[in-house]
Every structure is written in C-alpha cells, then in structure tokens.
Length: 376
Image: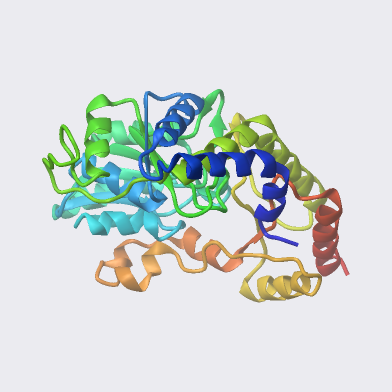
C-alpha cells in the first residue's frame, strides 16, 4: 500500500501524461517554453486571480512573496509553529524574525487569538516592526481567514497565504490561493496537485507585486533577460513540469478532488468514536493533503504505527518538532514564543494514507486495523 499512490495516478493518466511529456521533448522548449504560460493561465483561472507566476518550489514561492514586500531585518513576521520548516525558513532568509503563533487544536491552523497576543507582545517589546503574517492552510484545510484578515487589517500587516497543502480547498465558494494579499502553493509530488519534481507558484491580483515577482524569479530581469534591474534568483519552472501540471490539474478538477473527499468522509465515518478525527468547520472544504488523526500520547502513537506497519500500512507524523523547538531557531527568545497546542499535537498526531485512488478494500483494512488496536 502506498501513502500517496503516485504510481496508480500515473497508470490512470498515462496516455495523456506521456503525450504531454513527449510533446515538450519534441518541441525542445524545455525552459520558459509556451507550456509554462499555458499552465500559469490555467491555474490562475482555476483559482480565480489575475496573476499566477510559476517557480521552482513552494519554498521559493514564499520567498518571492516576501521579496515583493521588501521584508527585511528588523521586521517581525508571524507564522504558525505547527507547520513545515519552509514557512518560517523563508522569513529568516530575508533577515526578518519569525514569531511563532500557536494553532487551533481542532483545525491545526493558526489561532487568531494567539496571533493577536503575539503581535501585541512584539509591539510592547519595541524591538521589531510587525510586518506580515504567513498563514498556512494545513493538511488541505483553509485557515480562519475571516478572523485573521481582520486582525491583519487592524495592525496593518500583509497576509501571505501558504497554500502549499491547501490548493483546492475552499471557504464557501472562494478557493484557497485567494485569501491572502499574496498566496503561494507547492507542486511537490505528494501535494494535492503535484508535478514530477519540485515546483511552486505565486498568486496575486496586485499588478505591481506580480511584476516584481516575475522579475525576481528570473535573476531580477528588466525589459529583457540581459537587462537585470535588481538582484534576483533562478527560480523558473521548467516546461516539462508545466505540461505535467496541466494534465494533473484537469484530473484534479474532473474527479480527484471529489474522490479524495469521498475517502476522507468514509474514514471519518468508520473511525468515529475510535480516534479523534479531523475537523472541517461548516462552510469549509478541504483538499486533504493529509488525513491526520489524534491519539492519547507518543507511546500510544508508536504502538498504533507498529500495528499498522505489521499490516503493511504506511503512516507519517507531521510534524514531530514544532517550529519554536527547531534547532535552527535556537537564536530566538523561544521562551516568549510558547505554543502549547503545537507541542501537544507534535506528540499525538499521525497521518493515514489518503489519495483519490485509495480503494475501499484498503480503506477497510486501515480502519479495521485501527479499530482492532483500540477496541479489544
């Protein structure tokens, strides 16, 4: 059994995928070919924004957004502690200071009340200038943007939506990648829509920021590629990945998003009352990058993982070390960035296999193994 079955996905999409890849090879337009613009237009249209700028990773997408805002040393950027390292890493790469915010125990996303506390604490200290908030759509579920955007407006902060895992999620009729002033996503292979390597994209309705990001991601280019008007980076998405993403986006729209939600709903139904299952608030729709349950403690989790492994069922822990406890951030005043919910989740969460092609037979095996472990 695969945790996220990319082999099965390829078998289903093989005819379209092989043609898309071979067409690029035949064209020899490998870098910044026409497929890249076609892919950017398709993703912008799906999300519902003016601009999509493709780049070579979700990490670079975040960094490019911060560059567009000229985030710099002396700035404080608020970021959830329970997320992947890149969400905070890019803040430090710009010389700014990440300030870690706790998360909601039900949704795993940024807790707006703690965000307000951390902003006020930074203002009170007077050493840093609050500048932006990186809001992560964790495991496919959009964050509480109604509250967070109101807080950001109150304190005049930019909001960067990190939808690396959230592409395809919705609040009401509005899609992920439209909630922040700028939004980003990742096309890492295991993401809701993934390519066959690294890839990412930046989304915005702001023309000025889009132009800056377009420049920064190709060596700070100006009117042409040899007119460099700023210090940039090499972060182009290649044409092969763009072609792959066009095939994946079609499948995602046609059936994958619905199918993965069907799997998640069945998990929740079968595991109800056995373990703590993920919460999707009313009016929200998840793209289920992960299906993450909670158990009592680390010891129970390790035993459960062993029981599942004995049945050849893979599991994963996202994330065993919260950001405020990462070695790389020891230089920060961590005692003033306490995040107790993130600490607890790090010890109690475990993610189960989930993807649009997970059979009911495998779903039953997973759920029955978990039931047998807890109900003895």
